[in-house]
Length: 112
Length: 112
Image (cartoon, rainbow over all chains, first blue to last red; front, side):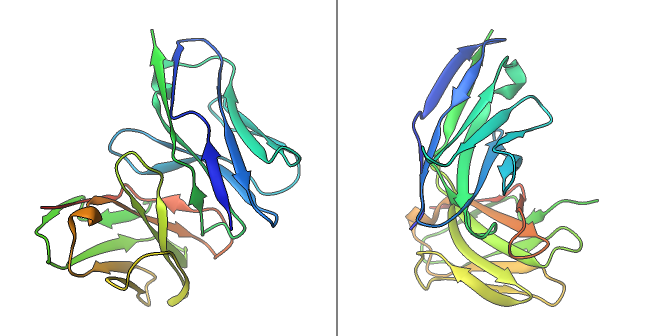
């Protein structure tokens, strides 16, 4: 069975500081990995994905995540955050992209 | 192009009642999945439909049912509502059963 652990339920950071949101997963088979972002009272938006190929994947708004197979991790990073990055971030895994298993979420709060 | 659309956006029901939630996928997408997101938790997989056939079911009681129509839209039905069914219900669509999922804004169901 697949499972996802997001190690931090809340992460407060100052604006323009770097941030890392941690995600570890457990699976006996190869998986696809995703990060989704959820703004208040909205649905989920795909931030980035790892399906195959390069282990470092990037989003258009400055986030990146690195797939580490030996550590079964897919941590999300951004070198400099903005107030607009305040949201809930969910890590998800699947061996079939539609059947997603989500972590509990990490609430990212940006302080001015 | 319109994204995934869900209706209604908000709904209040009484315990024991039945509810139907609706989802229209992105044009051209043939796969629809449903997720339940209880406040403060990550989404939980309920159902996946592809080409009008059920392809997967999560760990939910038989009170939950769904179907997909020839135009690929979908309905989620929940019978005999319980207080614990209060949640954000998310619909996701994808082109096929193994490509990334795009989520709608969700239906907020409150059971009183």
